[in-house]
Length: 152
Ligand SMILES: Nc1ncnc2c1ncn2[C@@H]1O[C@H](COP(=O)(O)OP(=O)(O)O)[C@@H](O)[C@H]1O
Ligand SMILES: [Mg+2]
Image (cartoon, rainbow, N blue to C red):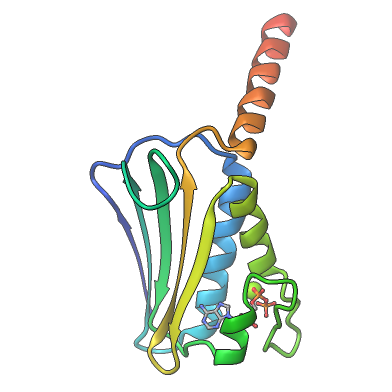
């Protein structure tokens, strides 16, 4: 199995909640690992698009693409909804909820493309600034910096 990372050369810094984003990407890769066997690959791509369909202004796009098992139609249809299902024996169905919540908190969108036997790609787009989660993360960081300065 090959793990690869493709980050666009012209990528720009984006303001967001690093912990929420980490959890989202962690879960996407973790799910891809579960769907991948010998000879497969998982590629994580990131780029910033200055002007696109969503949203107004620049957004960050992250895609985790695997060449694993693919996702059954009934799972794919319900993914990222309240009726989402797990196909794993001890599955929780929580991973994709964590992804959806993180993307929602940033005012973004997430979608899935999958072909049985060929693989799955999950892509999300979030604004590079101005999202509620980013604003909150910045507010907390500023508060902490102020606190640290006082304690010195
Ligand atoms: N990359 C993927 N390839 C194939 N199926 C996937 C992939 N990611 C998610 N799934 C499907 O979506 C379901 C829900 O995923 P998730 O919410 O993380 O819960 P869990 O991993 O606990 O089952 C999984 O059980 C699996 O069927
Ligand atoms: Mg999972």
